[in-house]
Image (cartoon, rainbow, N blue to C red; front, side):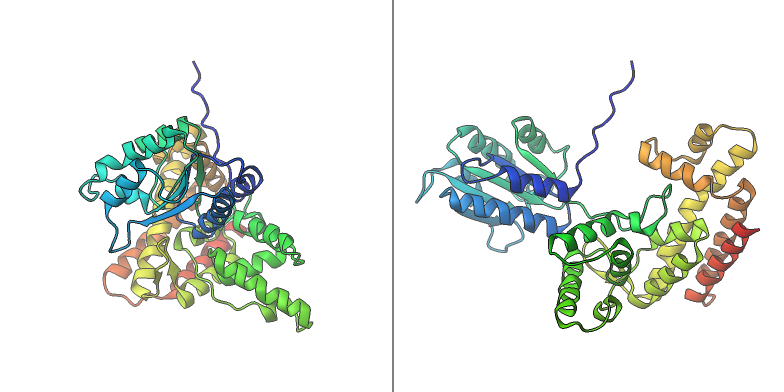
Length: 375
């Protein structure tokens, strides 16, 4: 019997739009889960829910596990108690994931049962759980979803195109910016959006500020888009690896320059600027992918099928990972992948033996790898 395919999760912008359409003062969900690290989408969803809750006369009760004054007993007591000034309440719990960890504060074991009891009471209250670390596998999350709760993944958007369609204008982040500009009635094509994303990075708040500048420039008639946009973006070593491996010299050199000038901003918002750390991250990103590709290429050269080559490389069996690996593998002859892997191994050895490594070494790699794809 064939395994059932896992249903793809809707993209965050589509879920936020659906929330705005379907939630109102007369149609309030009993529970909403906002999981993921993209604060832009979390804030959008909260604005919709708070507006609907206020219109529905819900008493707002806010809790934040990061607040030094937060007390779990107060939260559990409120969930199990009645409303003080209204017949129903809106419980907004930020950092809810901290209460579901094994190392949660004392008393947190009562939290899931208190949430489920409030939701089951049917008194018109709404419980909103927010947390970057909330997972669909959490028992509480699964129980709420089974009961009809909204479960919205507020993940970061993909800032690079898929390997099988490497057009930067196809990146999810670029498509979002085009749609956001249209929503704000700002004319912007895919080429312009790709430039703004390259200049800004994967920060939706910063991209929205760039749109403010573009909009003001349109009103003032002051120059073109490139004059209005402020270059403030960072680069990711993990997404930069793709154009380097594909031999896309223009994107590779631009990414290398951005990485070593502006650093790398992680999921927690912290920006890494230390040159040694950036070199180690980029070498690691390239080495891990090339290790897989060299192993797959060796299997192919020995007569294995693409599927067997993927297995030999130890690539995850998920359809997305498999498709990405196969697309990369097809970019070059098998012997070239072995050569590229030797190149990155040599650079790693140099970096570990005290040699002076900088951005120029990666540009040299990009040039060398580009020449090989043209030969």
